[in-house]
Image (tube, rainbow, N blue to C red):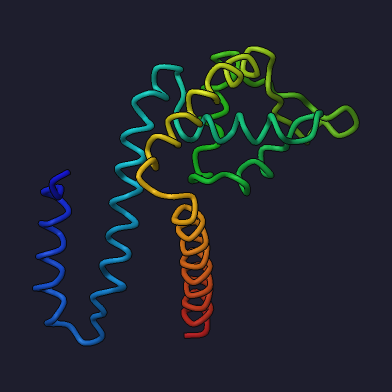
Amino acid sequence: MPEDRRESFYHERVSDAGRRYKGFDPLSTQAVLNLIYTYDVFHQASSRYMAHYGLSKSSLNILLLLRHGPAEGMQLHDLGELLLVSRANITGLMDSLEEKGWVERVVHSSDRRVRYARITGKAEALLDEFMPVHYRHVKSLLQDLSNEEKETLAVLLKKARRSMTTQSANECLEHSRS
């Protein structure tokens, strides 16, 4: 498969421009660009078939959290903390899921201020139909990698994520001191 035009464009520009800046690390920059680009390719590929089921990555994330969460449901605050996407729009997402009949909001029996979200049977059936399609798709997207390469990739991505999280926390701490 020929190299993607976008990939070669960014590689050339970053290599040329980066040399002008102190502290430029071409390998770190290349790794981050590849990470972003790979996510974008995955998102585009999966968004197409997810849309066929009326799902987005955010709605799928919420439904899976609810499916595998406590039977009584989950508080919206807890859902927001566990989301793999921005939690800023949790209310809008919940409104949309409720409108589709995939979730219901339930008031806590002893504390009316506490509200839970619970997955419905309709969403359970949707997930039963969708998840095999999704897992086949994910497998096919990574078919060119051996199992050993998939394991290595998973370990490296986790290590990179840990490094980014630590560095981000350190930068926040430094800014709060200044």
